[in-house]
Length: 284
Image (cartoon, rainbow, N blue to C red; front, side, top):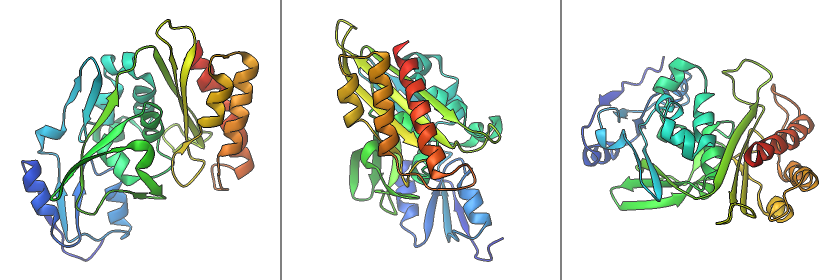
């Protein structure tokens, strides 16, 4: 275990949390499923841990006509078991429900998953496909960042050191269908070799496709939004041939590398296969 003495604080308000994080080498702690591993391996040695579990303002889900708001301390288990969310954003509830195991899902939070920024995680691609926005607060004020612009590299985000994710906002879009599929040849609780989130939005008549978003994890240093070319071939023309062409374009857009879960070439092939399956699920 790290030899550095670590102070533990449990603020009861966001303002208290922001004051506490100003201490040098302090970190926020949500469910701790990722932070604990980094701490045990001495990849981080914080002087202060600011636990967010007592902040009720970060623990709720609210759904209005136009927007879903999920507090950053909401667990993956709560998200995956929400009937309302499963009706509106099935890609998200599916992604939250396949993370690790039941014990991990009960502890892991949506804010922690986003801040950790591991490109193999299931939930970020689902949220990007749903056009989600991350709301943050710091001593300097508040801001909102589209999740598609949130990641800068492996374990890197646009967050400042003292910036706190407060909630995730997802627009409620009429006639939108979404899906998340993953390929994991090892244990079900492992990171996927490839994960694909897709959303397809129809026009007001629910006939012509007006928007397509395809996002992958496990095939780059960040979640990969591979939409532009694919949308052009599907928009208004969703047939078996155009879906296969779109999946092939996604295959060309990803940038995987070899690891224990598969070679780069294998991941490209699986990207095509699972993109096609995700699109078919959206259009079924």
